[in-house]
Image (cartoon, rainbow, N blue to C red; front, side, top):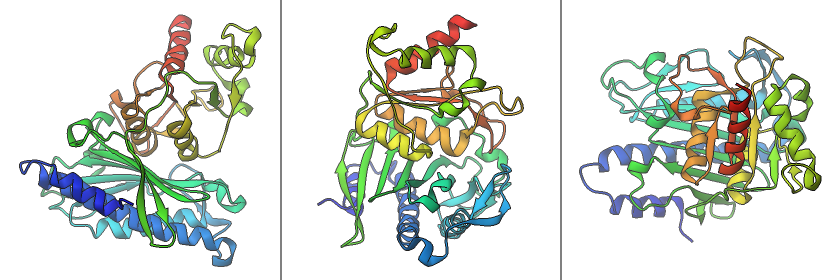
Length: 341
């Protein structure tokens, strides 16, 4: 089997010398993240025996109760990445501000250390999401402002999924994708401790019969979103003329992984429950990296109208609505919202 190291060696061998340095740096950062992912996998396997269940007794910058493993995963990633010579700075869901690392570093890393942490105590899927950006002010201390780049500036993005098996999906930006491999999926072999290649060039069908949304918020949705979901629920007797199935993992990383594996659409829409929040999910370390993965796999990602990766970020913890997955379904959501406006 092709290990992650084998894959990267082959990738660099096909890379021109004028860009090999920057690509090598990105690869080194991804390797650092996957090494920490193995540690998190081991902790999750031990579960309650390692005393990692329950709340940590503090809130993060989002005002959310931190789980014990939220804090542990964040600290593991923070320590590893700030020690990486290529990393100029790190931003995390769990930290108010960016953490400067190495001034000579050429990269910035954003991450959600443990997406879906409410699933920890019930042994459901969780994951780590990451985004890698260039550091344009190399030689200077990284600040929050350095991270405020559009999603289109990402050099690479991906996630680690901690479920029945540990998996890692990532993609380079198109300009870096020397081998035209698109989105690549690896699985952790528990015998060897190595991530091994499962699939390259993952592709999302433009049509689907599966959708993921938290229906408990239906009364708070905007009318076009209510209309869209009602049309799906109407099944063969409704305007869509076919039945749809609902799936909901309660962790974005799990729902996106399912879409990459078998298609579908994931929606966390804008609602009226809290007028101060434009959406639930964070742009910089959730929506942007997942959007890069989805688009590179042939899908689409919007806020219901606007492309996610075209957002000009104003804050590292900025929130946005998210509609991503099967291109034709994402387009249908967009049409309904445009008609309403």
